[in-house]
Length: 114
Length: 116
Image 1 (cartoon, rainbow over the protein chains, first blue to last red):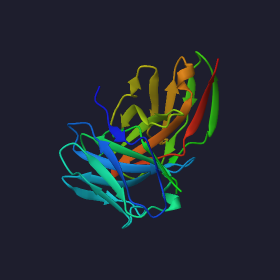
Image 2 (image 1 turned 90 degrees about the horizontal axis):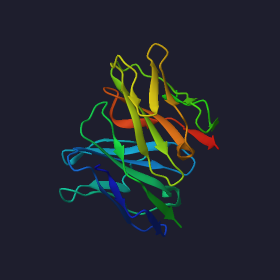
Image 3 (image 1 turned 120 degrees about the vertical axis):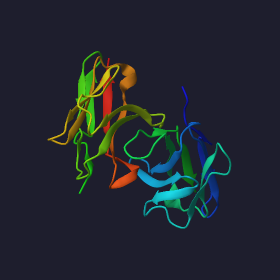
Image 4 (image 1 turned 60 degrees about the horizontal axis):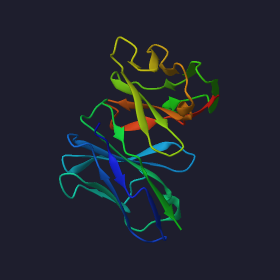
């Protein structure tokens, strides 16, 4: 069964460093998303991406964050200068359609900022 | 106002018994989708079941069923014949077709523990 994959599973970085989290969405999906979950808290929407551009972003997704689809399979989230409060689990998701369709999540990348 | 409410922070169920996890939602959007996801201790987010707001019948997927009561704005998850592997966090979530076209809004979750 096709699935969303994410690398790395765990990333440790120093405050102020740049990190890139990588995702490979399900191959025939057209809509891509990033969410984050701070330990013990709710899952929060960050950004959605369709047709090579951001379609929606939350207030969390400030200028420190960017997303890119560098080729036909990868979808990346870059955090330019990490802060302690960026420590969280980051989930990539994809869906075949927008609207009320199902989003399938990857296994997550646990980001720890020291 | 909370869009998704899960009033049970923690639940216990005996193995092989059925359990209902509560979820209520708040939306004025006429078209929306409701989801349940399972998050085991390993951290991944596993899609379980989907209910569309216009679906006439309650969704079922194996041992999972969704008790959808539109007028009450509730979408409870029923797990039949609980197994030890069902121990996890369970999140109720919603997508609104018009209001928040792209994002899934999650509830705070319910921690389910299955007792042997």
